[in-house]
Structures are given as C-alpha cells and as structure tokens.
Image 1 (cartoon, rainbow, N blue to C red):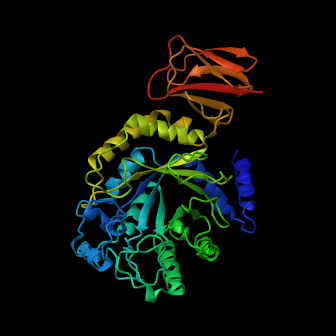
Image 2: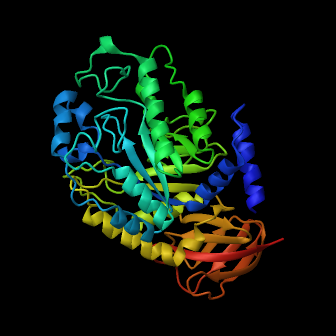
Image 3: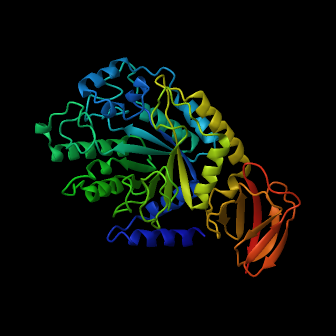
Length: 430
C-alpha cells in the first residue's frame, strides 16, 4: 500500500510542472497524510494584548509603540513538555507553531533581527528550541508557520494590510526583505533538527494589486527542499497549489467547501489539510470563550478524514505561556476518543461514499468505516456497489445484518444509531 500511495503522491507532484520531490519528501507526504490530526499554535507578543493576532493592523497601532510590549513579555508558565504531552495525548501527530506572525516578532533566537523573544524580552529563552527538543523527545513532528508579510519592517512592500502601523513606504526594499526571510528560513531549517513542514501565510496581502506581485516562491521553496529534502512546503494562499508545494491547505473549510469564503480553490492530488480554530480566534483573545464542544470537534476531525484530509486544530496560548484550561479540556476529550477510535481515521483515505447528511466514510485497505453522526432510523442505505463480506458494529464487534438492493447496501440496526460517532466496520471483498 505504501508504494502505491507514494506513486499517487508523485503523480500529484508532476501536475506541478518541473518540481520533482525527493524520495524522502514523498515518504514524508505519506506520513503526513496518515497523521490526520495536528495542533496549530498561534502565540507571540500579540497574546499580551489579548485581542487576537491581527490587533496591530486592526487597531492601526504604530509598530514602534506595539514593539514596546516585548519588554514586558515574560511567559513564566510556558513549559514545552507540558504542551507536547497534552497535544500528543489528544492523538495529534504534529504541532504547527507560529515562528513569526504578521507583526514581525520572531519566536526564536534569530540573528537577522533583534526583535525576537531572546533579545527583546526579559524571558530570554528560545521557545522554538525548547519546543523542537521536546517534540523530538516525544516523537511528534514540528511544523513551523512563517508569515510572508510584516507590519513592522519598512522594507516589506505593504499590501492591503498593515497600512496604519507607521511603516515608511519610502524605505521599501523587496530584495532586502526577501533575503531577510530566506536567511531566517535557513536558521529554522539548520538549527532545530528535523522540521516536518514550513507553513507559509500572507500571499493574499497582495491579492488586490493591479499588477501581480512576484513573491519569488519558486526559489524560496527550492531553498527549503535543498536544506531539508523531506520538509514539506505548504502555503495558505487560498489558491490551487503552485510548483514546489507539497501539501494543500484549506482555511476554516473542508476540501471542496467554501462556507468561510477562503477555500473555493480546486482540490489537488496533494496531501490535504484543513486548519480550524478551537474557539473563534487564532491568537489569544480574552473575551473569546466560544469554544466548540468536544462533539463538534470530534465530528469535524472525522469529517476531515472523510475528505481524505488532516485537521490542523488551533489553540491560542495565554500571555503567560499556558494553554487555556478549556483548550486542555478539549484536548483531553479528543484524546479519549482517538485512543479508542483512532484506528478508523489514522492511515485512512477518503471512503467509498461521498459525504452524506448522516456522516462520512473512511477506508483502510479492505476495511470501510462508516461514521454515523445523525440518523434516527433503524435502517441506513449506503450507495455502495462493492461486495460486503462482513458488517459489524465497531465498538462491540457485534455482527450487523445487511440487505443488498439495486442501489447499494442497507444496514439493519436493532436500535437507531446514537452517540458522537457511531461506527460500522465493513469488510469489503471482490
């Protein structure tokens, strides 16, 4: 199965013209596709304002005034071991951490700017190093988010965001800024061991330009693949993937859906990932306690797997470096589910049946898992033409009666399915 999957992933890569991923990159793609659950961490000095990660531009705060917050940033509650342990226990296979967000503040000991967590704060610790070391110890992948835009640096050519943050447009210097980014990316990929992916964001900042902006992505992607051939490249540009990208990202929507207005792009054959918030915001916002229920999160995870994609679920840590109590509670609840039912999503592909009103399906080899969320009847018709050799309730292994019809298979229950996710396992045959 692995060889077949790698061939399929390579075929998907060939759709991107000249880029030919290395064998270790193809292997990393398959491991990524099998992972199904990752945790996104949006954390920086913006957490101190408790207004979300876009506060600087939303409130038109002068970047020099904003930067003063760094001198008071002392997240004494940050503990990489506690973070990674809680995330791993939830069933997540990787963490994506914001190395540098749009406010330009770097969360590692970069030599390219003094505006970083080691040089500009009394905390003085390299958060990415501690997180990377712990991820490696616990066997969980570390992905790094990196913003292509900057509301602080004068040399970044501002797009439609960051217009009121006090940047000097006369000092725009794209070659200098591009070199700065590539030097930072080189640091991230040479100092912290294996990095599972670089997750770019910000392309859309120039989506309104009359003349298309040249981000010089091809050269930047090539740099990443040269430094770490297995490192995956993804870009949250809300477009169909371009050459050099290894995964396709969807924001706040499942692949093929566009309820949030940011994910109407064509679905590629690359490994897929949907990023979604646990509450309403990405970065910490003190009034945002609108956390999704465990039932909603678990069903979203399963629905994402039913589309053949991963769920990257976001948490915004508090200014003191602790994960919010409600977020930890949700991680624990998700861990209870994944420890029991993870087999039905990890290492699976999208099932034989497209998403239905009642739920989704996932497939692993000849095993088809039917995930039923909402169905009030004792019969459930499946538009399935393949031969079903055996049907059983996944939880109890109790055999389930089936009836063949012209349109497919009907499952016959003693009682209507209930619970967060009622799973039926079908053994498929020829």
